[in-house]
Length: 93
Image (tube, rainbow, N blue to C red):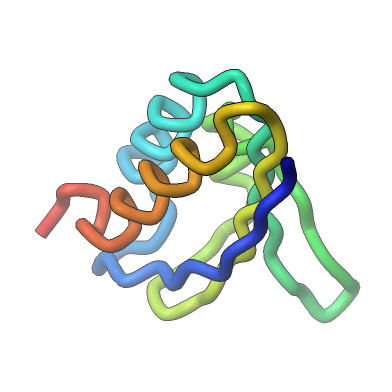
């Protein structure tokens, strides 16, 4: 099963180290493959959401919308957990 959803970064500082670590920690709880995709002037940047350094490399800021693509047998649960984390502003506010 593959699912995809767009999620907005709404915390004050964007995907800095703490927020990136929280995303990776949540993604690592699931067996499914989890990717974050960010549109750029040069195309689409795609990183493994289980990698803190990969997430940091996106340089995504507040207000940007990322696509989250997940596939695997627990994809629904993974998407639910990540969506909740984004909506909670990574528990920063």
